[in-house]
Amino acid sequence: MTTESALNKRPEETATTQVERTRSRPYFYPNVDIIETADELTVLADMPGMRPDDVDIQFENGTLTIHGTVHDRQPEGTSYLRREYGVGDFYRTFQVSELIDASKINAAYENGVLTLHLPKAEAAKPRKITVTSK
Amino acid sequence: MLTRRTNGMDPINALRGEVEHLFDEFLHGAPGRSRFGWPMSPAFPALNIWEDEHNVRVEAELSGLKLEDLDISVVGNELTIKGERKARQPEDVVYHRRERGTGAFSRVLRLPVDIDANRVEASLKNGVLTITLPKAEAAKPRKIQIKATEK
Image 1: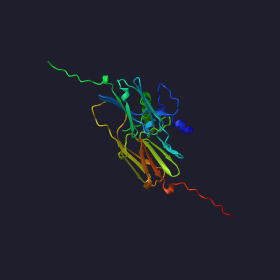
Image 2: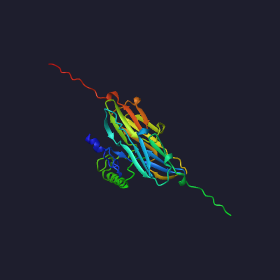
Image 3: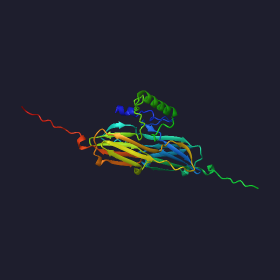
Image 4: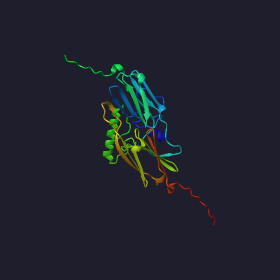
């Protein structure tokens, strides 16, 4: 048990945030792709091993917070032969500078990838201005 | 090459890890463990392996893959996991961040016990690959009865 809890303290697992969490479980920053198109920002996050209702997404004052709860997967009655990665919750926050229409944010979770669509507010969309010559 | 999720918010830590890894490789020839004794696994995918009396269970985190993107085979006691995560088609988009790796990978694992290759099962659920490898009958522990003989 002692060995296991020590193993959990891998430097890359104990991510630092400004706000401390109450649970002492290790958590990870998921790898993300953030893509911008004319209409929206799309966030793709690798968060394997969750159920869709274990994901908690918040958007407030331009801060996007993604939190995913991951349950332990070690089968009962087994012992480790090799342990190359730790399992813990996912957590990451972003400051979004684009104007987002918060009411239209939607998310999907498939094959361990969370896809978040953040539609831009109408005012933030690029407008094509045609220049006419006289 | 695909890498596992990293501490994206802390470039100093990431850099330190990289440098340590390089020194380790330079000094000891065989990479495998960092100064802190943690296994530094450059191989992808990283694996967690458990065993009990009957099975060896191999688990890997493979987000964004479908079962048909994977090729799993067992020859003797060698398990091979091959696969590919395809890149998004180029579109008229701007990438703010691109941390999720793409590309093909292959990993061969030598199992410590003989496996009944006919009964190997694999499942992929929510980006977690689980392979159950039943141990061969000969590899299972046997309880040996000791009889006392009277002289």
